[in-house]
Image (cartoon, rainbow, N blue to C red; front, side):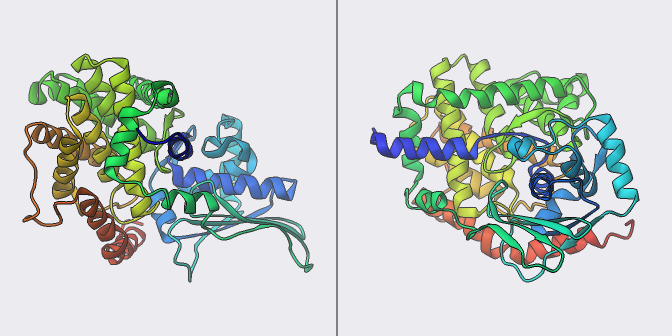
Length: 435
């Protein structure tokens, strides 16, 4: 069993990375930054300037903003200034209303908002917001993680800015987490040996994401993939099976979230889709496989912590689709629910990496439900093979005998090798002929 002090550090890490969110986390992080700058300004801003990293722009361009019926950053920024509350974190627009949306539309029409790419930065998650009314300005900067403020200041006219916060992107907590030395074995041991009462909090992810999935099936969100799979056409082709139920439940929650439904989900590592993909396959499998509540709690913990472990190495935002990471976590959880040992959980990870390495992230958008379903399909197939001790070997591609080296091969490819892909994807997205 992992020692109590180390368990507490891991629990702190999970609680920081698995949090509720409404809407896609990139535009919500921008709205959060606007809300903080507006609060510092102390009044409604007349003008707002947003300087963003390329990855933030990519993930915020095509996604629905909750409660607005609109997509993209301008309305998220406007609402962040008008009704946003920084104390809500990634639920910053919780108090949005029809009246606020109409006022936000006027803000946009009056050209009060300017959004630009921040040049000369290496940080992939960077959000700089300056709100101005008359001669007064307030600036807030988020970097590193979606809620991590690294700079706050106010300024009056040509006076020197009054700096309220100025710190490096990397926080002390993050350094400690890197020094924790997470491995897949440690993830497995933590999930399977920690006293149940210490990890029971993870069931809030089950409650929120299962509720989001059920609510989503009541509407017509995004491309309605989840609904299609649950109806006669989907069942006629896919069958009425655990497999089809997992795909439907997972993709429906993603459908709703990407379309901007005002439905909270439990995120993982700054992504609601990752939280959904790390949760719903495990929940549905456990329910239909008649696993115990304890087994489900431990499987969910394994899934979420495995995703966090991989994300710590990959980075918050990259050219590698986050569903690869989250679905790898859910494959670990499903393998455990099948009665799998640590070795078989490791086999499932190798199978996942062999199949999904290289899936490109081309921004947050309704079609993310398709990518999530691809990841979840692979998670189930990988677990099915793993439980029979079948796995991709070190003679093949990125796979090595050491599963942690496999994981770092994947994250190295995503964080280093696919940088040019990231730039090309953004260039294509911003230069479409139909723009």
